[in-house]
Image 1 (cartoon, rainbow, N blue to C red):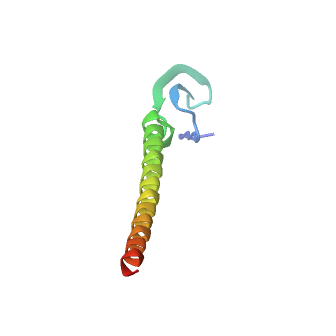
Image 2: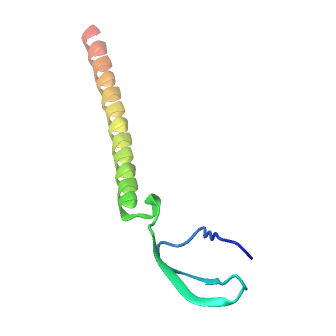
Image 3: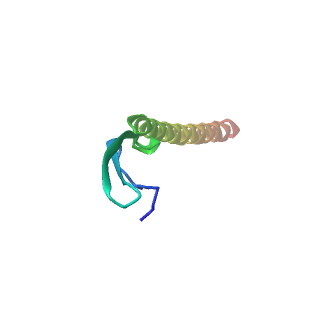
Length: 91
């Protein structure tokens, strides 16, 4: 009794209607209901934008990895070709 605060945690995103009633000084409920509309927005990680960004970042990382691997193999092949031409020119 006498509590003048309310807290709610882990609410799902959405719209809520908070209703409050009170008692008079004798403890009798009074018909003076008040309402507050509350909108809980989703966290950033729950939004479509964040999911699109995560997919894009993943695809970019995959593309960079593939590029690095192909560049490594091209350079390796080029070194092998140069070594073969050096060997052929020495004989």
